[in-house]
Amino acid sequence: MDLFTHFLVPFIILNLLKVKNKFSGAFGGISIDFDFFLIGIGFIAPELFIFSHRGITHSFIFGFVTVVIFIYILTRPAVKSFINKLTKRPFNVEFNAESVSFAYFGVIVHLFLDYLTTGGIPLFYPISLTRFSANIYYYTDVFTTLLAIAVIIILYLRLQHKYKKMAMFSFLMIIISLGGIRAYEKIDTIQSQNLSDGYHTITAYPTNDLFTWKVVESDGGTKYRYYTYNNLKKENSTEIREVSCLTIQNGPYQEAHDAIKYADNLPDVRKFKWSSHYTIINAKQESGKWVITYSDFLGSRGQDCITVNVFIS
Image 1 (tube, rainbow, N blue to C red):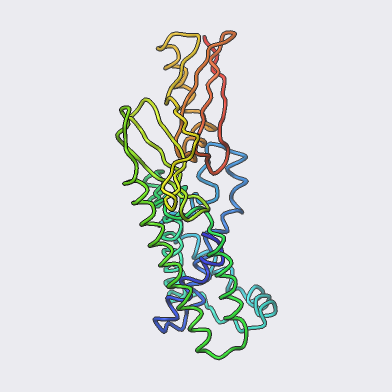
Image 2: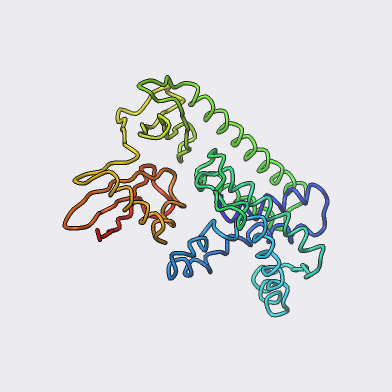
């Protein structure tokens, strides 16, 4: 989800609950997306790949740490003065237990919204690196973003409260409805497919188009088949591709397996596998080394593939 929606949703919920400290929730909702300040750490030290967008801050534990720091910074006199001058509105958030509590509520809302999108977030880090995703929304929904911006403008203008309340309620109902439609479309897409040729597991991933889904079928460990499906037209794409989970060329299996096992522990490879939806491996022996390529046929949040060389001793 986008920054505007992350600001707006907790603000609206707290406003409907008649909570006075709603701006704490709103700023808490955007706090963990300031992880772009940490991205450089992941580039400099690949083994710290958790320092990335939708990385370390997008967990229950470090989300709390982040929001405490964020609210503390926002409530410094110089920062509050800057915000007041920039917005020309009073900024009354204070650094106390109440503000931090409502800000953390904003973080929880943020995590839930990002959970709905494709890609996933490490909710239980540092206990687990596993990323969780419902794969209902695409990374960013353009319509939702534009709608959120429009509502924020309405809230900023000096209009009667009833119009602002109407805009907030409408926005909340629209994104709930869109989520429901997307969830239905995903389930219907999966149920519309007929598995064959040994494929028995199926998953659907969202695209920018509400009715078009990327479909992946698996036979349980050796190969995948993927294509796009338009649930409105009830038709698959003309291009259907099959890929093997592992391909070995020009060398013995056990030697390739040992080389892959070594490569799997390299920081760049661990980072790639953590970011990818599906990791397929091609190992090719040439000139006294194994050239191992890791690919993500759905496209990851970063690279689509990475190649490493493992020399034969």
